[in-house]
Image (cartoon, rainbow, N blue to C red; front, side, top):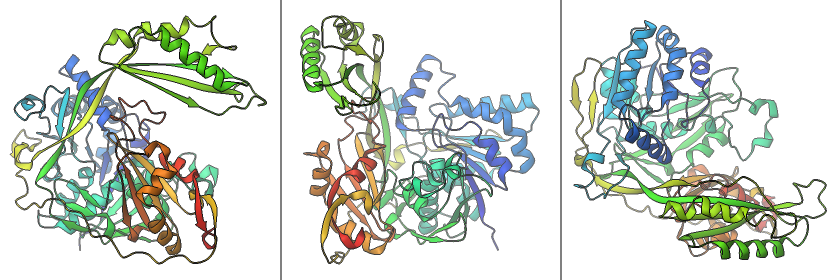
Length: 565
């Protein structure tokens, strides 16, 4: 009998809770502790770090966490698998060895490389990006684990690969074990964002005691040989694990029912979630398909320069004050930035009992290829209006010089064009061949239409029936919506169409919208292309990563059957 592999997570992003590694190691038994430190924006930041200093380019917080906990991990027999290597996994591996030597803790360190395609950018037709990293799969990680590595460092692998790799090594999965690999991909997707699977950022947060959510514990999975797993957390830690929290994370940034990776395609429309006791949810039934013939590459390039100023409009006549400020400020800009976007935050409420409550923020955001156009000349033009504009004029910050911003664009290359290499603890380099069987992604047939919910309707917020979690994929917003009953799920699948999404979210008018039904999860996945502009680093939206779009959508009203309310 093969026992489950206990895999935990201690980081969902670069800057996550520093104490999480110690909390996970001390909280209960583990076999593997993963950490996800990378995002599209993080790759840009680390790429610029390495351009300044070739020895940098990795997440240095992981080293600080190891310094506190490496001895503890070795005592407890827990290995690390992390993507903290960023744009320099070999550099981080060397730094981990040096740290282990200094601490006197014998540690076998391995790393995975090959994702960095920047030296071949011109050859591959990528232009002149700052970073160019392919999303590698899990078989390189598996080689490192099988070779006895205590710490495995990667660069840009898919987030789920941090879980799939140890699963391959432990259970002996091969390239043909697509269902098992796909199941582990779904598990990895649940774990990758840390406490988002244990009650963090949850639509239904107010259904749980406040003290339960003050300090959520990080999640772990009891991974089984068939790719299924129980999602849970260490006993006695904060937060909650239930079907709601796991559904929320499953729907996060997936852009459809087919969740593609370089090792398999996981069919998220086949995932089954079943309660398995307090703070335990069984994730099972995931079907896998052959991976696509190409892998995704994240290209980060310099997009230009940006700056912003925020005017505070207090009391009455807010619209008139805003009009005066806009007219004066725009007249003072010479030259005018290539892009100037105005937005307001708040609504006029002159009778508020605090000055802040009686104020509205008017934001002017500018981007331009030329740094000087959006530098001090831009913000200074606002300051010069201080004694010459609307009554109560003031700004939220002193004039700033602006900053450069990057743009992430996806590219795709054949799997065989990416050198996937596992560098083992003894220095041996093992080439990881691409999958021999691939298949292009295809659209899934639409499921049968759900039955119509009978009876009268009334206008109510969508949030009365649906819960939500949203996020970004470059400039695309992804919104997962789910119901807690079969009747609510049927209505949701019928009611949420692309046209309805555009009506509920006026900012999406004119944009491509796709709605993917996921009946097994009582959910739909909504994809709005272009809502976030050119991505988080370049976006001029108030919520550049789309993290709150789902909550905005839940607050919008439409006709809902009274039987569901």
